[in-house]
Amino acid sequence: MPRVFSGIQPSGELHVGNYLGAVRNWVELQREFECFFCIVDLHAVTQPYEPRELESRTLDMAASLLAAGIDPARSTLFVQSHVPQHTALAWALNVVTPLGELERMTQFKEKSARLSSVPAGLLNYPILQAADILLYRADRVPVGDDQIQHLELAREIARRWNARFGRDFFPEPQPLLSPATRIMGLDGATKMSKSLGNTIGVLDSPEAIWEKLRPAMTDPARKTRYDPGNPDICNIYRLHQFFSSGAEVAMVAERCRTAGWGCLDCKRVLADNMIAALAPIRERAAELRDNPGRVREVLAAGAARCRALAEATMAAVREVMGFLAAAEE
Ligand code: TYM
Image (cartoon, rainbow, N blue to C red; front, side, top):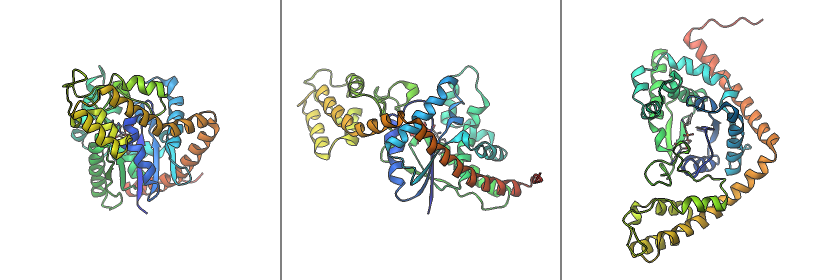
């Protein structure tokens, strides 16, 4: 069965962007593939973060993923730092990765521009991402479009390692794009992202969802209630496509174009549908939050399974690269 691997940072909440762009797709893929889903805490520490919050964010992300439908009976859910082979393989891949490729990564350029001192970890971030995938020799990687470049580099790294050591060992991982490759934030201008403060959290209360949607950006040409709008350039219309029925989506487009209703009417319908769609996730997450022992058990079982598979890959990598085997004590 083809193997699927994907990761998510515990750097903030599960929001509508990474939910629609990735996690909802993961839930579907579990039916068809052998899936590994990883909370990438080692990636999260490459940017400024609060150490006292990392543990609770990691647990919250695990609870959110389980609540969203990741099923530990079908998929392996684990925390990256619980499987030390991720960093071991990253080192082995480090020696075949061209520096120039790392320097031209868009995410590196964007993130490093915001920092006064750039840690090497931020530059090497995509090597660890390649290691995550290749450690399990996964060939399908469901991601949003912001990760496509990192995946191209992962393929390049796999090719270079195979060529350098004369083996066809690592498969070249392919992206699996969901229909929501890039969800824009409430500003309508940039990708929905916790660090940009333009998100709606999957676990937000109904009141919070409405408070956030109400002032969200729409077609700027609709200055008053009576100006007709263009739904094709409106982010609220785009969100309707994920949360509203086909009939509602058609009605929204028509009433926007004819100024049949105002943006607030349109947002209210979206808010109601979004609240209804997310309510079951929120309820399951609340139950899990009251039962952190259950979440930790799932993560422990996931890490144990991964360590066994990862060690088999690392044993082969060490042998191919010519390292002296450690003597048994
Ligand atoms: P991260 O944590 O930023 O995002 C997790 C997943 O959500 C997608 N995503 C979005 N999709 C559509 N619209 C948005 N606004 C949006 N925001 C986030 C991302 O594309 C991603 O699929 N480097 C990765 C994590 C990672 C990984 C991996 C992924 C580490 N190792 C191995 C795949 C395979 C990241 O920071 O994702």
